[in-house]
Image 1: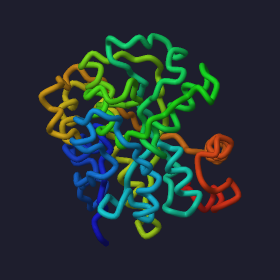
Image 2: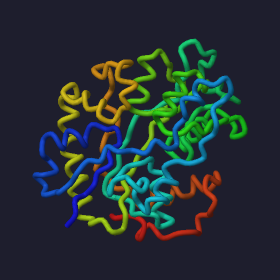
Image 3: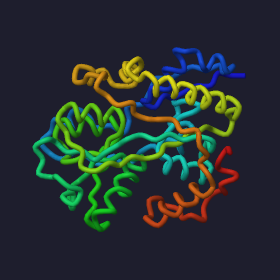
Image 4: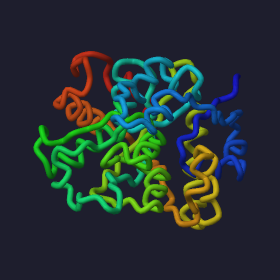
Length: 301
């Protein structure tokens, strides 16, 4: 049986489970793949130029489609993305969604400290940087539609999470929706939260990957969660593992929160179908809810 290739997601659990040999204890043969494509990011010329940054109309959903359940051709056998994307990718049979656990991470739309935006209502007509068909895209809509009519919500498709950090630091966007370590970094650089956009994330794997290996992987993450909950200060240094080195000099990870938290609860059929309805009511994909497979086929539960 081949090794399970794990694509980390910027959370502490993968590294704690590796350090403490939880994956090995569970009998999992694995490797952690830190390689990530530099696509869906703004270029240095875009960030330094006088004009606006271009829209990047590609995101996590498109990566799953390209990788047939892997998050890109060179990504891991098991990966994580915001639950909306994983839900739809599994629905259209681009991979299999893990239904026995999910994760939750604090996130927020932030603005520079000197911004005139003080309340969510002040974001009417203001571009908020998000990643196309990624969690920041859906969660910005979900959070802002409580305060604003849909035609007042303006999204800027600025690329990946770290690309949005680059764009925010370069003052190329007036606001950005970021999560976990990206949120903590911008807060240390003086950015302010305007509205929380906390959201669920889900796990995805291709059809050829053994479900029992994914089961062992998730069990290792859950076990590591207890260590993080008990003594988070021992493990925050692992945030640097997934963070581009260009940001290391800007932050003190000791001041970070704990980021993404693994929840060993079911991603139920009700959650799946409610999410499908929400996405398709807003016409976030080119196909309708009638396209694809059932919950029973899309989700390993």
